[in-house]
Image (cartoon, rainbow, N blue to C red):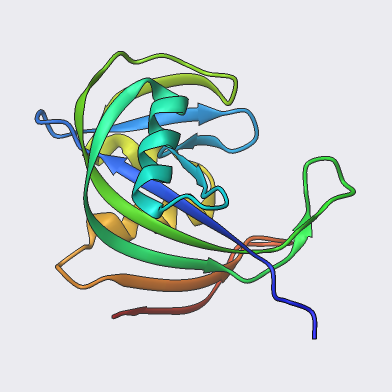
Length: 160
């Protein structure tokens, strides 16, 4: 039996005391909330803190989980050759602790955006759906299964 392969990723909605949210602009994904893949042997919180720092220069404290998302589709990576496996993403709310906004090898821009203006900037349907889950958070965690290729399609959506 072949062992299943999934990418585990984390993302953070970083909320400032002024009611703004941190966005980063990536080379392939446009404007998104910072985050990325959990490395082997790394726990989810450490991975999220590392990814946000790497992509934006901001130090954070992880507050709470608001969503679990599964991209159950497989597709080719940007190189057109490499198969991208299914992905499980855990999305958290975070609070900034310090640091200086800066770009990285993965990001071309980063900025604080008013919470109600974020969807004006985010174009990727999956990222928009995950941000909407944050806006709709009522204490119950969102779960959503979707595919992004060839078109974005929600397969299952509920709270848990």
